[in-house]
Length: 300
Image (tube, rainbow, N blue to C red; front, top):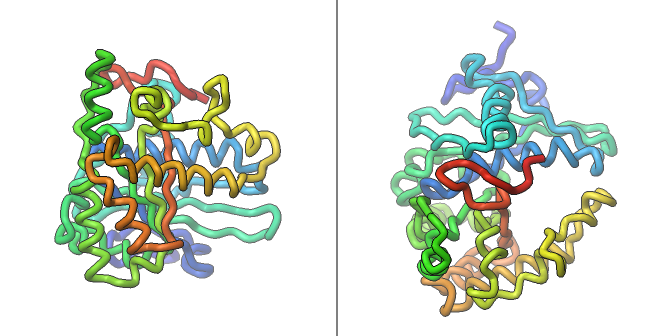
């Protein structure tokens, strides 16, 4: 056979990836935290704006079968979100996780790297024992994105109820996800040496209800309420100062015990990961789905 196959999941792998190597990026988080929707939207945005950075991203036609090809999974999920305005169905629990394999090529360096996204069912992150058993790839990851669902925060739930906004989200509490991660990190101290992005998903709720929460969101939005992303779109250059300001603003949110149920987590994260950790806020849809339908938001 001329094909390379993973010994663990039997996934067909690109030859160039084996010969030149790959960077594994893992996406972790509890059930219903929005991991798959985030990955799909991230790929779509990279395909749309990556050329401004001289980057071309291509979902690969590799997998155990055509249905499991990254290209097929991505296209099906992209249609769900951007054509049919529906969130991606919940990721099923599997004994052999099939990663998303993407080829990222730079017109500047004339080099290509392979990004391997592991999108695992949230049940695998409910406790450290499940993580040790089902998320072994975390140890091999170059970096990790840990998704935290802000709809699990009690004060945010109360604000949505007070505004008569229906919330059917069965969110995983921060405590559950982070305690499992802390225990996993304790058993493998090398984890704290990896770059970790702690991502607050469904961040549009913070933006829309910042006055009720008492949050200053000027770091994230302009005076007219539009997202502060025009500089990147116009110039193709990410604003690192803006990213750092966003990190500090979110840390301040999380330090506020009047807002967050467990305000010690931001301190614990920075103590354990130090300069390897940053906080981000993302919204895959730009709004809350109503009865599982995306009624508005960035459909581009």
